[in-house]
Image 1 (cartoon, rainbow, N blue to C red):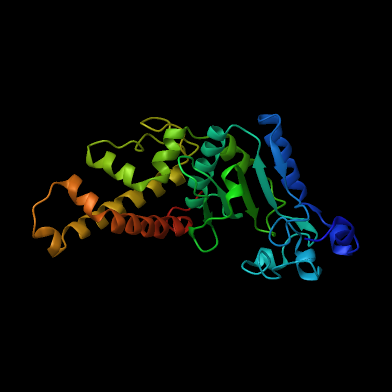
Image 2 (image 1 turned 180 degrees about the vertical axis):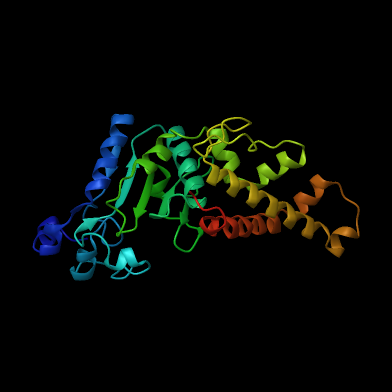
Length: 287
């Protein structure tokens, strides 16, 4: 690990700074959670990734990965200021609240409403596994155990200096209740509610494109349609699995069926959700 004196000998280190809009987001989070720990520019242990500037990653002899965080998107390759650090670590709040923050962020990222976040790591609670999502390749991701106690968000370098009021709203839970987040992020839960004769999303649309009546008031229409489409596809997948000869050979009730097929069902539902949400902008354009 290099010393700070060694790092400071390099011009790229001396020029490095937090993207201004990320610094503003950090201040807004501190106003909501006084005493929260916010980190954007990494310390001397961060020798790769979005906590470092693109310039530093390219030029520093101390960088341990000269490709990660500067190669997968056009924004990462050439966007923004080459001296900006473009990641944020957020912690220092009660663990139960941090878990809820991670759940809200995961739902929003998977729904396609925060494409400027390229990856996140944190914890949903209830286990010792670091949860996360690679938003460029659309797959589950994980990281080292330090992320059990703090949330990490990486921002596309070409979008790191945008207005992040949308990210703030998700993190503090301004727009959705925990129940709404749970339904929107869990196609299986939504599907079972529908199969029981309930529809927690259907409502009357207001002029601003939000649901103003029904089981989930004020849910953005874009997310509501996405959840419904994903749930319908997941139900279709269940039907296809249930029709398999090995299942038909032995009469079972629906609960036993789902239990027997749970691994395949989880994988199929995940693919179904990503297929629908990944093309959401084309299928349900926002006016």
